[in-house]
Length: 345
Ligand code: MRU
Image: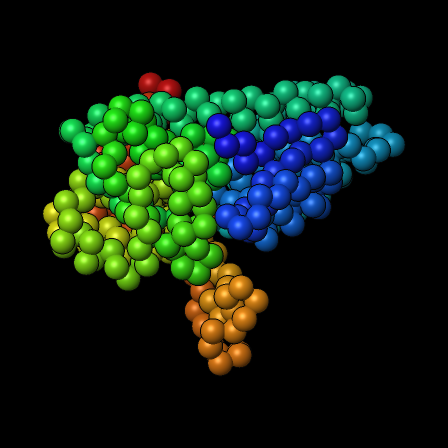
């Protein structure tokens, strides 16, 4: 299995996703500052992985020394703030930090060693839970399809975006295990190319048949091939089911509705933010313009061209046929569906 992140003693090792697929380099992260930088610079990315990485970031933060409880609290608060400021859209980041805060509160006032090992246990639990959750999403999602299918996906919601197996790619992996994937249409996902660089890398390693397309080819593929469904991941799902995911997801949801193709979101319940009523309340990260202007270190446009670079968009709930979670399948009206799933969780 692809291990995007491995926790060791006093360090965390990650695959540097900004270098894939041409270079497979593992980076050692030893401080909370390095973890924050790795998240901001997208050396690791994907909502669930960002959350777990932040949890380990908090463990690393306490590797430093603190002379007493007050200093320890200050160190904790500052580190938490630093990690929370890395990327605004994926709710898993804030969800994981909240889970770590609960663990911290359980041992508040204890000595540094006790707190550090308690937080390490908590982060390890989040890591293991994520893999189990993804496998359950895979099983639940596979029930939505009959026979052998062609699936379209965007960005990378795979093992690289999680602690293993993946969400959207978890469903695809499960279908492949059942011998039911005839092709995965992989949208390249401009500008950071998570589809072209990362999803193809994962599918290739697992021997899952795929075809890479540019984002602008999705309509032509939907029109001229038998696509059984689009499956996307999610960075934050509002209480009404509106879903923020990688830029381009909104367009795919509109196209799928036009061509009568089911559009599915695969996401753990930790990505559902019941505090946000609808997509309008989700902060969309805007990233630096050079992600668009510069490719492989070379300008592909007039240097300094004005650009707009939102990293995410929001697919409206009416275009989402179902949201696949680890506890079952949610359908419109999503608010009620989520409440039932959370109640059974
Ligand atoms: O900017 P990224 O690469 O972190 O965006 C990732 C996505 O949009 C994924 O689809 C989402 O986080 C789900 S990952 C299981």
